[in-house]
Length: 202
Image (cartoon, rainbow, N blue to C red; front, top):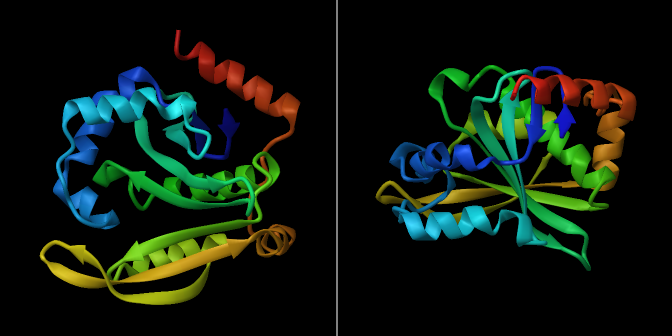
């Protein structure tokens, strides 16, 4: 588990399944990442059961510290062992939980996890349509604009451009040295916080 200031990143629990399934099938959330297609239960169950067995993917549940309620998840996908690269994505499910800084902190923590634990050297992500808020948040984290795929997405009945953003490990290290990112806590501090969090689950 990774402990931040407001949140912690940990495993997706079986009890999270119904909520994630609902988010997956909510049109307004699904279209943030491309074409909306309803997901049936069997396909979703296969995705859930395969999370721990897929070496190309890591998914963290996002929760407030001391609270088991699921805020969303951050996904590191298409992990390439030769290039040491991956793609990132994030979802904050509840409207009331957006704009609270949870997503930005989760992305910062996930980026540092990629550098320090997965030994990746490149991260990329895609923004569908004119989502200026998302682009501003990703820019604050350290992602830079790498290109525009014109009419490469189809969202809510219309073709949209897709913005490509990326970060190299050297960019992330400079961003870290400038003090714009929160470091993960040391092992003893994280252990204390993890024990406290787990005790709240009993």
